[in-house]
Image (cartoon, rainbow, N blue to C red):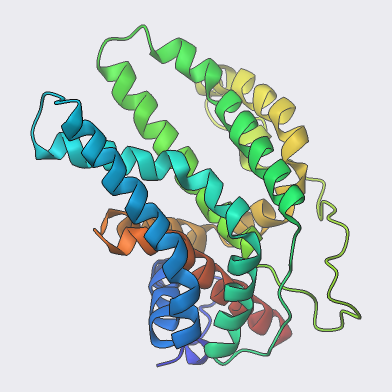
Length: 285
């Protein structure tokens, strides 16, 4: 069944929204794998990541690091994660064309790709890399002195924070030009809403928890200023919280699958393109 033919769940169908969100990354994977030119477009980044994995694993063996095979696998995966921010820069135009083609291959109306320049992609990647790390800096300072438990909590929070922004970046890469666009040049990027995202809003709830989290929300508001260009994607995720949760869970499963995770970003961008197309279809209806 094509993704375009699956019914959009109602506002009160939370389980249906969660299910659809979880299925979208796998729908993106199916669309890419069954479409020859999308497979070719996804193959080059995957080969580069595979090469990084092999080089890192060989380096670990060469240095005779202590530990089992799992240790060398960890080094390889760490190399892939470390190189992940480079992918949106090198393949920004390729992923944009993949997103537009994935929509068409899934049966949605044809749209032209949103082609950013390499300079813009580099600048945006640097902004994300710097300020997303800064957001967790206060939490890191508080948790690091706690032996073991602090390190586990910090690693878990860092992973979930990176996963959240992987979805934001996938939605960003999956954008296409409006149907009535008069040229192929992307329009000037402007924030589409003024409400602060969830990590920069004062938390609600019991007073002790509220007072503990309020400084983090203030810090998030300060960090959010350079990240304002992603407010549209953040707002989209907040409008569809259960789908976002399901999408993140589906992305997590893709990331955990050996070999499949080499195509992680291509599948995620294709899934995000289908998500945006489904949302446009639902709003039009």
